[in-house]
Image (cartoon, rainbow, N blue to C red; front, side, top):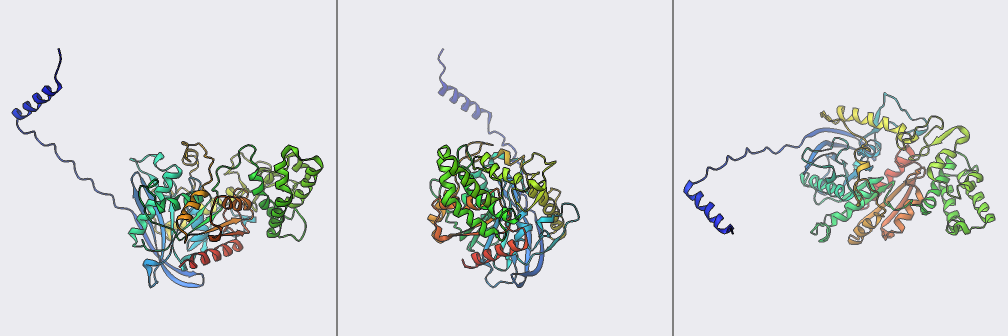
Length: 499
């Protein structure tokens, strides 16, 4: 028998009329909007030779699914505070808090850590006044992404909302906009200082902030005055089998490191040795690598001899590696005669060859030795100076939970072969007034000198708006008084020149 659905609907409606008006369900209790947590303090000091007072705040910002903490330092005695430059700073990972930039360079106090040759690795650690902080020329905001620092994914949030290149950049843009609105600074000059993976974040943010109908659905117009890249890691496409670019990019840093340890000709300087490596690449190394297995044996031996004089590794080892000495191999070979290995993140740090573990981060001579000092210094500073009162522990690095699950665009944990410098190029193309500063440490074997230069000069970034700087330091190019002083001088000039 055929059943008419329309008739059934009419019958149900008629029955409802006979039954009388339905009782309304009780309205759900109004849910209180949680108030963001804010910890305020004040301080004073001399920065860039200027004595000033500042207000500090560790502030919570709420996004759908996440609680994000920012630490800001705002100068108290300026005549036009609403148009004073603001620097937003963050580190990388993915999965790293901003503790490194905070306690190494940007904050009004820094970890007492100026001698990498004799790094302190056990308590007590100390902080000292940091006159190099650029608080004299700009207010400073340090951002900890979700699952780093005190920032956390909330119970109604999911990791995939934040653990990805695009998702992360959008969240950082959103929280940056919240800060600007909360502090009335939407018309202030805006700068990003980024480090390591954070340089990818900065490139994607710069493109997102300009907006676009096919990207954000609108034209947001939240442009940047400038971006600073430290230890840039923009090109995720290098290093596949048969790709010789990593060896070309690494050679100047290997040469500078060999000079630092006096493994090459007496009288060298790291700068001069790096420049000699660039000339060798142009004249001999690039043609040799390009020739591949067609390279004649006598020519190969000559290239190995020249290379040995530059980077302090024996001709035998260079020939055994087919002229290609990786960073990891170099770290073990350079000081093997002393029974030592150098750090990849900062080659000035050394540890014994014997007894080394297999964790590429924790067992790195640099990371293994400077992390304890930074973590301890922050924990003491946060409580005693910034007056933070939270049960949540501060998470400096969350590699297992965040890094291994990161979505670069092809799914969680799948590396993406892409050069994110093209995002930066697009942002600068849209915004001709935006400027770029690139800083690299001579002794950085992870994101080395040559890689920074190659990546930016092959991505369409306008070089007339770009400046390159090298410092006598490593992946964190502010470790050590000489490097930090030079870097902050360049940052002051960069920000001050954009007013």
